[in-house]
Length: 370
Image (cartoon, rainbow, N blue to C red; front, side, top):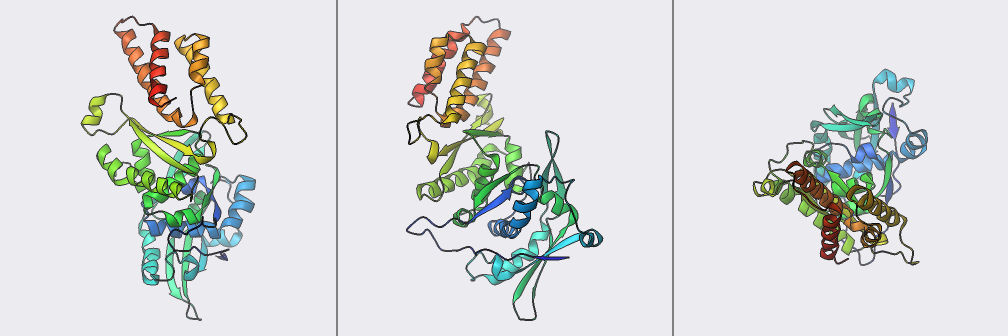
């Protein structure tokens, strides 16, 4: 069965405009953005163009019906064939302004050589299904002499790739076009798929799988940071400064022991903090504290009182100094303090927990100018 999608528009390959670019918004399924692959910058753009051409399926079928990998509907023709064919003009996939048609043909024919792991959920547990490739492909000229691309999705690949099990989010393809590396694109997609409210923690091996398709892609933290994370975060900050996006990310590696960092060991986790232009500071344009911040401050106050026996009046004052962009660092801070308090308990070292936490947290806020 052949399915042909007509694009709504094509991507521009021009550099930064003098005014903010028009948005080219598409709906991205979480399983697509959170897949494990090692696609290049051009391969990622091809994949996203395929997703764009399938918007009617995603928006009108997958999302309303919350289709899982076990609930995808196939026609009798698709079941008999065992696959679905998507045919498109090569010009519809042209992401380089028409200057590198030969390169694009080569990329499309080479993509089936790269494996991909697609996430799926069973209950609250997430697993990954490994496929040798996302699709088979063919590039050819039709009777009118136009270059065409044929993508052959096996039914298994299709039902996992278009599953709603990891939700959906919106992305701007014009932002993707402005990214300077595959890692930048990946981090932009991940930021939207994570739907971050303040921060996200992730194991380094899981980040490497998301960025490069393998959990052991780098041997050390310094290599992972230098070759992937640092540049990607810097690139998103560049887009933020040019008002192409409304957020940027900062990160910090969490080591339980300082010696682990000195020996270039992988951190226990990496904390990414989201800095959103629309919710920075304590108040919105209307002078009202954002709801997320109100909830975060209440949670902090209750935690200080119940878990650390901090006096209520002190807990209120401390929690009111919290801002959303501190949440990731504060979470790591509490992990270290809990580790220290546990060591004190094991070693029978007496400590006034409430006073210690209150004083230390005051220092944390002062370091963050709060």
